[in-house]
Image (cartoon, rainbow, N blue to C red; front, top):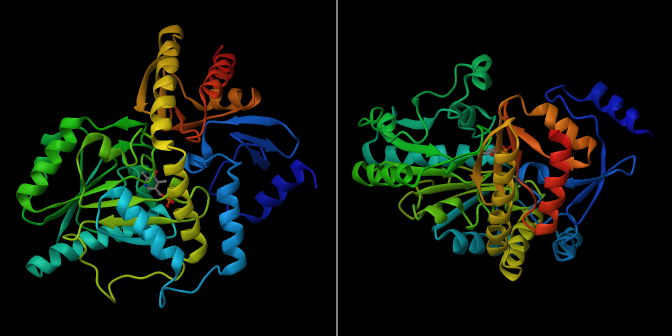
Length: 393
Ligand SMILES: *Cc1c(COP(=O)(O)O)cnc(C)c1O
């Protein structure tokens, strides 16, 4: 079937919730993707910060194939070996105490919200607790996660959302303090805002939030779904800030391509008990074999250190573009999570880049987002810059 036929077939049958680029992907190799016409593209989007290992990690693929042959699903009524191993590795990497595996990022956020509310309920028996979230945040599309997503455009048609959510301004500690009262049970934020436009938190902001949360016994929830898993030069972005959350969410690169998420927490915040929460698929042998192998490969290949090194190089190169091009206002980001802020909409540049064989994405209207596989090398950064310059001119 031709490329056009696939697109027509998809548009005929799939709910139209995306305005998709006119490309049908066929296969991946190293850090490149190939479309059904055989055209090769350098991938600086990684399936939205998911495919951190690129497309040719044989060890990862073999682990999944072997697990498929052995056992894919059993339910959470029983134990399974990959689940036990993946849990141990995530706990070790995060320094937190307990983890629950989900099927997606948005479900990880749902779990984090439930854990926070239950923690507060256990303390005072009340059911009117509040959560403070940030403007321009993104936490997912299910009703709870949407309720803490500070983007009125995403929320409007789906009201009423869950109650007791208030919004403060990112990097504005006073705006958070102004919302805190005796009902506040949690503060939720991304250490580096992704969809909202690649805004890194200022260290003093996170430190200030930690201090308030400690003082008032409020749980601090960090959404590491996009900025976590090595992308910013530490396994989790909060580790680079030295500010530990009570609850952390992960997904996207956690499984490097299989649908898996997680929320992890300290012993103190481990409020959920049998009957409080559950999932059919979450933590099944297939996805956990992936998670477990991902942690092994990260360690063996020193990927976090690598991301830090290449991220430094990428930062340097992008900063030269900021100096060189009038249409670029500034650069924001950390490591391999970068945004070029343009003085115009970014999507026309994305389209030009695709013509040049480069995959980049947007974050908000004016930000060109780069979240490449962590395994990219300096030569790939050079190739990206060359293609991006051809797209900008
Ligand atoms: C992608 C994302 C989510 C939602 O994850 P899904 O797997 O799409 O549900 C939540 N938070 C952040 C920061 C994200 O980037």
